[in-house]
Image 1 (cartoon, rainbow, N blue to C red):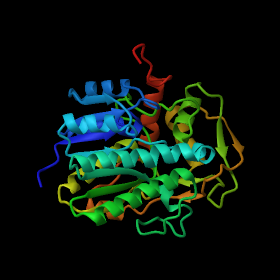
Image 2 (image 1 turned 120 degrees about the horizontal axis):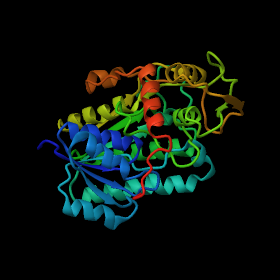
Image 3 (image 1 turned 90 degrees about the vertical axis):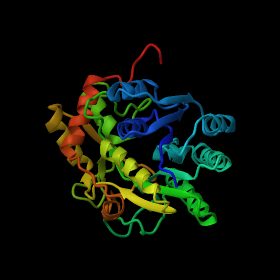
Image 4 (image 1 turned 180 degrees about the vertical axis):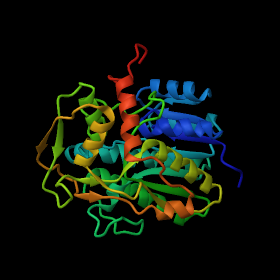
Length: 344
């Protein structure tokens, strides 16, 4: 098998996608991005190119549209796909499940059909720790029971099963399933970071927007969980570490491993209140908050066993909670309104 040189990144203008594109370019890969810009801005990729001094290809398109996918594979010599494109809010998936199944599942089927048609058999899939549901033991291992508790998690689980069946059907397929825990932080430059549309559904951009004065106070969903302080405990992984994990997975695909599954996290859990305390220390800003009821689909504790990724991918998270908060604050204070451009 020839080495992977050109990578298609679906949803590459998004938060994790843009950071991964940056490290792909720095690692010497050719990069083509498809993104419909429904929850992202092209300015993120302009900044990626400015930071790296390298160009990437961009197509404004949708993976649910067959002609968009076929056009890319017909005109670009793609060796592998990193698949980020998808909706990602647990709360939104509970209120609008059909939209999540259509976008996350049907969109992936369409992508895989296109890959199959053009004999592109390498894929890295952006999965999630939500596939584990309420785990029976911690830290969570890759062979833990899978039991997604919300539609978002179930869409990830369905795609995982599709990839498993594809790899069983033919030895030509190679799929890397990466189960993220809680991506946070921003690039060290402060030039790219998380810029959610509307009110953030994830905690870190909510905290940083309160700190910069864009939002009044943080809502903490539940303070009666069986945890150290009653608030939910999560494994917060720096987006830079996460992006580098994709490079490691991509390199592993050169060995034609078939199907492989890895947790990407730090192996440590932090409560919401601990996260707030660290962010206040770094930023020098007080974060007002109020406790509200638990959200449907949320769980008490979630943190990873990351030994398999360390042994198999030679990857390990390097960043600390301190650097996560520091880089988030640098991004938000430099870009109080996120990506703002007259051309967008």
